[in-house]
Length: 129
Image 1 (cartoon, rainbow, N blue to C red):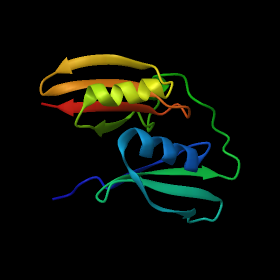
Image 2: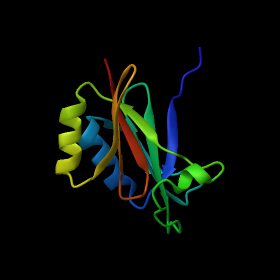
Image 3: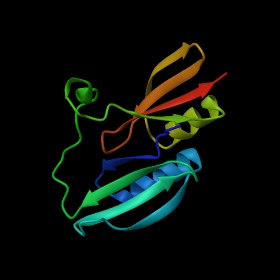
């Protein structure tokens, strides 16, 4: 069976984004170093089975997109979903870090909310019953 191993996103500061994901979700850095083409830096942050590769070139030219602009852009990343054991505790940690949560929903089979981190990446946080 196939499974998703990682996603790769461009950010302003890979080390800072990896540190944020580690703090909020208990992840660890699996690898970091120069990117394949030598034009930037990448940090792989996640678990032993999956991760987010956070990459930055020498001078990223992308600006932070408007919220939900990705949903109208073909090929864009809409959000990254992270499953947690305790949704309320994770939400408290995210809000204490200064992020605004939104789109809270109870749905079958769980509960979820979203937030945007400083690079404009939307993160869905979900807990299943």
